[in-house]
Every structure is written in structure tokens, then in C-alpha cells.
Amino acid sequence: MRYLMSHKLFSLGTDFVVKDESGQDRFVVTRQLLSIGHRLTFRDAAGTALLAIQQRLLTFRPTYEILKDGQEVAEVKKQLTFFREEFTIDIPGPDDLRVDGDFLNHEYTITRGGQPVAQVSKQWFSLVDTYGVDIVPGQDDALILACAVIVDTINEDAEHH
Image 1 (cartoon, rainbow, N blue to C red):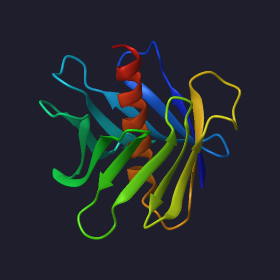
Image 2 (cartoon, rainbow, N blue to C red):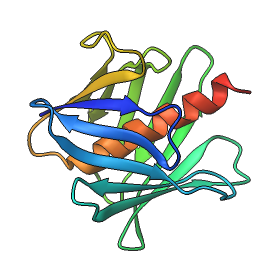
Image 3 (cartoon, one colour):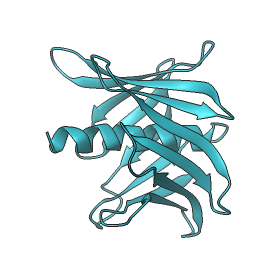
Image 4 (spheres, helix red, strand yellow):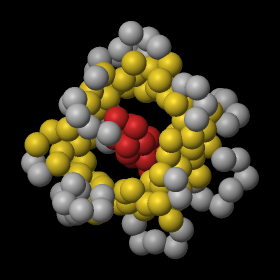
């Protein structure tokens, strides 16, 4: 399924609106104002909270937790290598994900065991602050989209520092 991610630059509270390929609102990501570190809530179109995203503070590399019903379901961490940036997504069990590509231009791939599970691309859209996430069937779409939001948030922070 292909999703359209629109980043809301000047809104209070709403950071992303996620639409499906037919243009229907599917998810909304809201930022908790006045918090130390980033705290976001990933909601379905009806407003039901699906996932909580929170930045871990006092870490060497940017690190975020994704929580479902108060339990950690993934840890997203930016890895620093000599030649390129990448992200790891630690999921309990053997289902870890890796994110490689051009993050600043929203052109990257999310893989599990070397197999693509999602492709993120801005080239599909001409709108500023809009990009697509094409997810392979059978994946946890909300989790994959939450990871894309984290990558975007980390890169936005890097641009402002």
C-alpha cells in the first residue's frame, strides 16, 4: 500500500497527516507540546491512539522508542558510519529492520533480512514537505510509518542544529 506523508510545518499539535493512495486520511501524528524531547502520538483517522513515539534523552546517537499499549515494540537508532548514515530498528525477536538511503531527500529503503519491506520516495510527488511510503503487503503499516516519522524528525533536528 502506498501512503502519502504530508508534514505540517505551521500547525499546532499536528505534525503529519498520512493519506492512503486514494486520498483518504488514514493516520495523524501529533506532537506533545511543552515536553522535554520529542513525544508524538500516532493515531488512526478516527483519533484512536495506536502508537506512542518518544525520544530517549542523554544518548550518544538519536534514539526513539515506539510504544504500543505502554510496551516498547521498537527502538529506532541513528547509526553513524564513516561513509554513510543508516538507522536500525530493533524489534523484539528476529524481525529487526534496517534503513538505508538518502534521508535528507526522502529516498530510502526499509529492509528486513536484506529484503525490502518499504520504499520511501519524494520523487512521486511535486509538493513541498510531501513524500510517499510504499509498504509491502503483510507488514505492520503503522509501525513502518512511525519509523518514517522518526527518520524525518531526526533529520529535521539535524538541519536546525
